[in-house]
Length: 228
Image 1 (cartoon, rainbow, N blue to C red):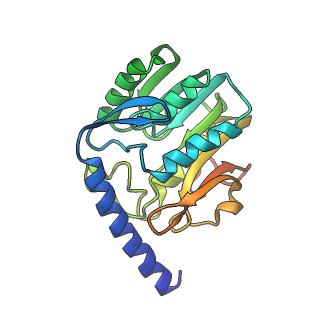
Image 2 (image 1 turned 30 degrees about the vertical axis):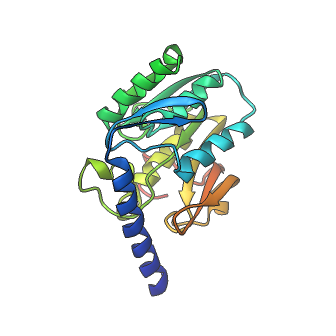
């Protein structure tokens, strides 16, 4: 990577990390796409975060209205609940027990508890391959290592290993003819988004471009593979 691009990426990472950590700190209630959501400290908020908003827009491209859906790294359940609202049985996974507690509360508050389950596990490691009609993930894509729990929704790993594992697992869990979608920044993806699949939505973030990509076969192998 050219030096100027590396400096740009480092400055972008520091600025974004600082601003988002401030936004993640307090407990709050938010309304998003008709949902009323409890957000506990450290849980990724849907409101005014471009990735979540773009993924919710991309859901309109999914031609299914029922079936099984998975949200890898669900946080407070924003996207899981939207999928349940479309008629899916939706499973959300996350490594944060705090965010999973918020997700369960949010499912009850929004009347979709019977259509959802939330499981504590790393990425999608607890889920069977080819078990979902739709898999979505909004992975952390900032290239730095996690230092505390507030980094969970932000730190993609120095070599983006967390980001890659979540995307690989999402692709693995989706059925062969299913949908596997993820959000990514052009400054932190490691690959041009068009090389990974079909771009369903795009927008501007904090100095970067955000894309929602429908993965194409082979773009990422399963998390059992060591390399993307």
